[in-house]
Length: 127
Image 1 (cartoon, rainbow, N blue to C red):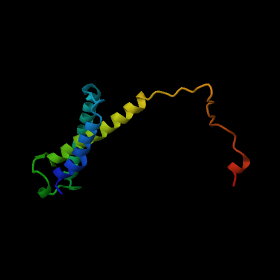
Image 2: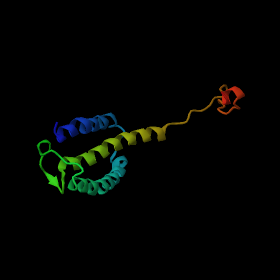
Image 3: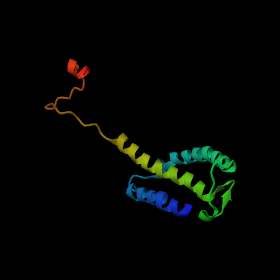
Image 4: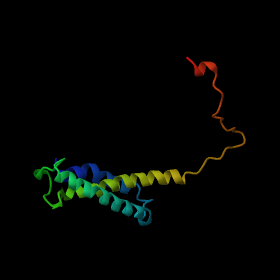
């Protein structure tokens, strides 16, 4: 499997799914913080990966990449950094938005709040 096909199947398709699923709640303003995250990801990951390939810690099969390299890394590797960040960012953004906008449930007068604290008995503490 080529690197591009891997990206298409396992990263781009899930991104497209998330974009379609969350299209009603997505906005450019809401996605703006992801741009800063992408800058951090590229700044932190590019030097490390370039050095690792230069030192021979890992490499890329020339038959499985497009052949365009920036430094020691193929273009697909740079795409992976950004696309993976986008994938996780889209998912995490939606999860956080759901949690932060969730309204607390009011306790009615008939319902008494459940008390979580209680004293443990001797049989519960020792074997």
